[in-house]
Amino acid sequence: MALVIFKSRASADIMMIDKHAKPILDLLGKDIKQGIITPEQTSSAIEKIEQEIARIKELERLKAEEQAKKEAGKAAEEENEGNDNDDSDDDGEKEVIFEPTVSFAARSYPLLQMLKAANKADESVFWGV
Image (cartoon, rainbow, N blue to C red; front, side, top):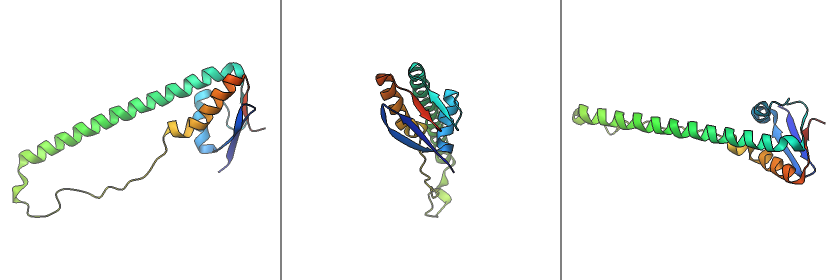
């Protein structure tokens, strides 16, 4: 596990674990080991990250919608079967194990803010040097 340290004269350094930085840099077509986003490239990089955030949020919304439809259909199906003969107190509930995840939007937020500051100040963002 290595760290990627993003630097810019426009903001404080940002440290990110390489496995979390890689998807962002892949999106931008940049190498994880070393690279630069020039002042001319910052607006394009900002746009790509924001588009990816919007795309992922839309996919999550559609997935949640689909899951809600499945659950509604399953509930209606169970209601039609008439589970009156079952005397157990289980109510069909299963223990849900919550595993918190950090979204792409949250992971990319610090770098996105750095890119915006660099764009405004006409500075580069670089790493691996």
